[in-house]
Amino acid sequence: MRSGALDLRFVALRAGYALLTLAFILAVNFFLFRIMPGDPIALLARSQRLSPEALEEQRRAFGLDQPLLVQFVVYLRETLTGQLGVSLVSGVDVVDLIASRLWPTILLVGVGTLLAAVIGVLIGIRGGWRRGSTFDSSSLYSSLVLYSTPEGWLGMLLLLLFAGWLRWFPAGGFSSAASLALPVLALSLGYVGQYAIVMRSSMIEVKAQPYITLARAKGLSDPDVRRRHAVPNAVLPTFTLVVLSVGFILGGAIVIETVFSWPGIGLLTYEAINTLDYPVLQGVFLVSSAAVILAAFIADIAYGAIDPQVRQS
Image (cartoon, rainbow, N blue to C red; front, side, top):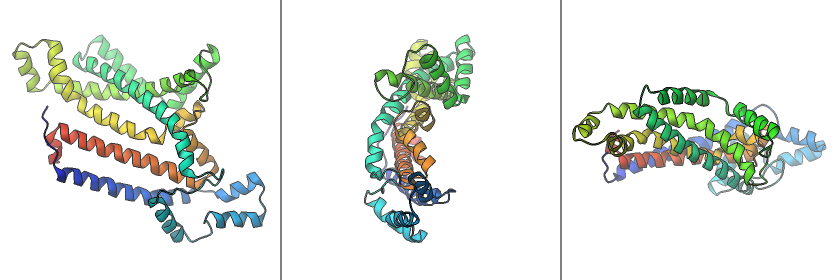
């Protein structure tokens, strides 16, 4: 595995791509939620039984009585100054609302992704190195099943078994450390198959390379060849996948958080969709998109530092 100093042109080019993507997301973020069917102020009026006069006052207060282009200009100005608006439902500042839900999501998705990455990589290394073995066949089948299983369905099965029947864990919420167990388990099982499949494929490809044959010809033992030559090269695609997955932390795990009533960004998104809370939806979408773009940028730079061939593409 070769390494070298990063080319500033390579970094600048990747940074430019990231900024262009973020600019596109800013535009999509505004118009996407305004083409959704329904009227958030009308929903608010029905839930709070507002009079027609109070309804119009709410429209003026949130700027929804302005032409769409004027709303877009105001949105850009406020977003670029760090103001994401106020929730139509609760009246709480969107930045404060997202910040209050951020830690539970980081805890859940961070721990779940870390466990899935470690377990998935170890399974993929052993399965790919011993292709065709009983372990490889059984782990590959299990990984495919887990990868194709919907997270919500898996979460409900875990709830029924461990919270409903066995009563080992709480059914939902974030009241204690035990509340974290089932959501993390559901999330880890959902990701581990993906990591194992990618790592196994990389190991199989690397194992067929000439330098692996050369290492064996030098008299290195099988474990040494695998540890010193195969794994460091095969782990690169999985590393990129894990870094990109970390970018989704700020987006939350909507299905998992909803199933387990976990008070994170994912549940906040679900609640905002139900009430058509435009400012909250825009804020969550922007923060989560920015996190994914940043993670992709970091993955590109790290990959370029590890493998100089990437910098030529």
